Image (cartoon, rainbow, N blue to C red):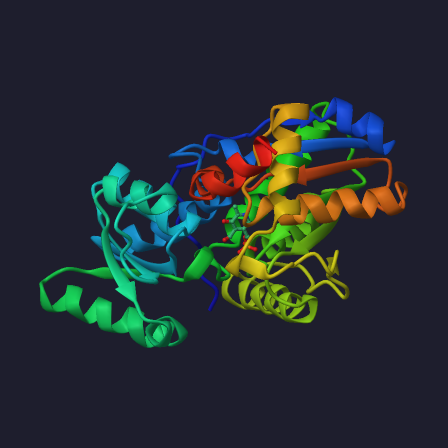
Length: 330
Ligand SMILES: Cc1ncc(COP(=O)(O)O)c(C=O)c1O
């Protein structure tokens, strides 16, 4: 038996597509950005689209408490906190690390949005399912109804948010947006890429979908993407195939989410000044840097018209204020 997902409207969509004029000239390709950083609910990027389905499911199950897990500066935990506050639900975010003396960036916003923060040891974070179950049990014992959102909102249900993004982009192309040869996006879990690949088949999006892993090795991301699509086909009965090849630009992970180097921060500064577009240092700067390096090496490798999906994350700029100040004043 297949199931029909419940979706609630959260995202401000369709999000615009914009050409990066100066960078396009410099690289000798048409480089565009789909501004999914503008999906709203505190600029919650790709997460809002995923949460349309995940929180839709939570409400359908009668949940009153959203529980999720991530790093101290998790965009997803902040997005869940924002959606919970918007809908009058309770949020519990389980974050790896110790409570800092001063809240900053996404953590500051989580607290202002009235999320309850549980600080996790490395051990508790490594055993995420058990940790989330223990928190769920606390909620149940107190008479609440918990709903667990996996890290980054990444399962076959959350991926449907990016299936819808592909449908939206296909419609934008039908109505006059450029027919992009390639759509490039940042990959952590690969949930967003899985969604786009499903939507490509269902909506007839003509573009190749290329992910840039920013944390895990390419093979692991390929496995996640394939598995997510396979589960979605099984659960929702989509008449699509698991793609034979998942295209990734590999080698741009740096030290992953654990850190950001000066080159990534310099790119954030450069793009802000050159195009008025703010990347986030942890996710989109690594991926966009990989895209630019790929095009600098061979500006025909991704076709003539390339669209980068900006998946958000702006608030994690602020915890890098010291390094950014040093680079700006050097
Ligand atoms: C700003 C931003 N972009 C991209 C991603 C990656 O999305 P996915 O986990 O669907 O690959 C994340 C996820 O954490 C993110 O916060």
